[in-house]
Amino acid sequence: MKSLRLQLLVGVGVVAAASLAAIWLRLPPDEVQPVTVPLESSATVLRVGAEDWADLVTTRMPSGDNWVLLPATPATAEEFRSDQQGEQRGFVSAESCRECHESYYETWQHTGHAKSSSAADSHSILGSFADGRSTLRTGSEQLQFHMRNRDEKYAQVVELLDSETGQTHTGEFAFDIVLGSGRHGQSYLWFDRDYLYQMHVSYLSETDSWVNSPGPYSDGTADFSRPVPPRCLDCHATWAAWDSEQMNRFDRDSLLLGISCVRCHGPGHEHIRLHRSRPDATEGMRIINPATLSIERRNEICAQCHSAGELLGRPFEYRPGTALQEWLEADLDVSNEENADPHSANQLARLMRSRCYTDSDGIACVSCHDPHSSDVAVLESTVATCAECHGQLPCPEQSRTGKLTPRDCVDCHMPPRRDAQVEIQTESGRIQALLRDHLIGVHSQP
Ligand code: HEC
Ligand code: HEC
Ligand code: HEC
Ligand code: HEC
Ligand code: HEC
Ligand code: HEC
Ligand code: HEC
Image (cartoon, rainbow, N blue to C red):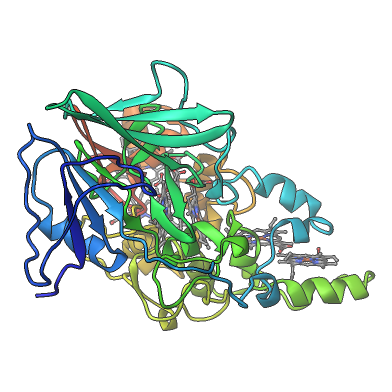
């Protein structure tokens, strides 16, 4: 059994990451079961090393309230600096493409991709800091979270009541990065020096409120120790240079947030250099136009992020136009109805199971989705796509139900489903994300 390198701290003083003044009690390596402290006395604070986090929360966390998990960030003197900067590798921001492709840039900037990660500020954080809406209560009377805005500095504050002394201890964590445009919700990341962690509190659009983050975040606990691996930013950002020795340590200046053009078109520096030097060229040089790829390769550009599976290569090293399976062991043969990670309906795997896909030459994601603009017209373009293969013949349902809108068609043939993989625990119950099933067909429960 792998030993947990964690330190147990009993009888909480302050929960601040930086200033923990309390008695440390180091567990012998093999004694891995955390000791539960009775609720009435006080909370239990664990310092968790990045390598141990997953193991701890999935198998070893004792049930019960008032657990506070803080990262055991290694003490490092110097900030991590990498010579692997995105610019040099052609991972440039969309600003660099703007000078020649203004119209693409204009519409792209409003997409979920463009806003899938950003620096935390008053515009990007969607949750409210207003009185009355800035508190997340939990099922535990001793623990709650307060969202604080002090001079445009935003923080999540853990408030822990010691029932013995009646004193409230607080610990605060500054919002650094926002993940998610807010279509479904947002999660937040914070840096402890140059080590990146997820914050306990997320924002859920469906309820327009602060919630415990989805997944392994139990109500009545506070966890600020979940390490953010490079793959998380690989799917949600354009570029990040990380320390290969430490799973969640980044060169902070290297981060290029938002998903820019180059993630779908491949590195752009050569293209830009050539076109700047030959302003009269009319044919694109040294850039991928996905429209010229096979349907399979074109869909794999999307599946680098819209698919679950084990990474065979390194984050940020997939190149559009190449075979995805060499880089990601994509889980495309999901044969069970429940679909696996990532917190999405695993669109390509579902689509590829449809008879529409298997009995035809295939369907491209971009036949329904315009990757350069936000998705307002997707219902119309979906119905137009059905017609490309099925013709304008009316659906047999139409004679029973009369006139149908595009939404009706899509709701029956690609119904929205609650996704058990993305579950949020709240004070009053559980909420699951509502995602569109990409298996086209006749569904028994629309
Ligand atoms: C200095 C001008 C310039 C810059 C900067 C520039 N492009 Fe282009 N790009 C062109 C020209 C000119 C063409 C050819 C005409 C056209 O298709 O618009 C082109 C064509 C393209 C094509 C179509 C290629 C094809 O084979 O049909 C894509 C895709 C593209 N550019 C993407 C990008 C991306 C992504 C960026 C930023 C990394 C970028 N461009 C930056 C000038 C530029
Ligand atoms: C670098 C990773 C990445 C690539 C490549 C990628 N996506 Fe996404 N996609 C995401 C993430 C992350 C989100 C969630 C964005 C959000 O709302 O915060 C998303 C959201 C979406 C959405 C939801 C609508 C929206 O605007 O938020 C659609 C539709 C979508 N992607 C389709 C595609 C298609 C089609 C492709 C291929 C042409 C593609 N994606 C390529 C990561 C990616
Ligand atoms: C394999 C790629 C992948 C990884 C890894 C990944 N995500 Fe995502 N994430 C996505 C995609 C794709 C979507 C859009 C899902 C959809 O709309 O169906 C998404 C959606 C989200 C959303 C909701 C965005 C919105 O606007 O509604 C949040 C929040 C989020 N991810 C957080 C995270 C965090 C935090 C991590 C890492 C700790 C992470 N994701 C890792 C691909 C990924
Ligand atoms: C989510 C993936 C994605 C992103 C992000 C993206 N594109 Fe594209 N782009 C595509 C795909 C896919 C096609 C091919 C569309 C098709 O098959 O109809 C394309 C086509 C193009 C074309 C060629 C259109 C033609 O004439 O055939 C240009 C130019 C282009 N994109 C520029 C950009 C620029 C500039 C940005 C950033 C502002 C950008 N793209 C962002 C996926 C993307
Ligand atoms: C036949 C049309 C069609 C195809 C093909 C298609 N989609 Fe979709 N997609 C839709 C529709 C319709 C929605 C729901 C839009 C809505 O509810 O507003 C959707 C929603 C989404 C969302 C938003 C999250 C959600 O579940 O609500 C993502 C992400 C997405 N698609 C990605 C993809 C990817 C990646 C591919 C290719 C593997 C793809 N789609 C292929 C029609 C399509
Ligand atoms: C690329 C071509 C293509 C596209 C696009 C397409 N289909 Fe199909 N579809 C087929 C083929 C081929 C079959 C299998 C033979 C048949 O039943 O005609 C099929 C089968 C079906 C079936 C029967 C499914 C089953 O499991 O028996 C339904 C329902 C269906 N399609 C609806 C749709 C709807 C709705 C859309 C748009 C969202 C759509 N199709 C888009 C080609 C396509
Ligand atoms: C109330 C649910 C419902 C709605 C709404 C609906 N459908 Fe259907 N559709 C069905 C069912 C059920 C079938 C299978 C009928 C059968 O096999 O006799 C079907 C069959 C189909 C097929 C035939 C697939 C094949 O086997 O060839 C297509 C294409 C289709 N629908 C498209 C559409 C379109 C386009 C719309 C919107 C105008 C639409 N449907 C609206 C339930 C629905």
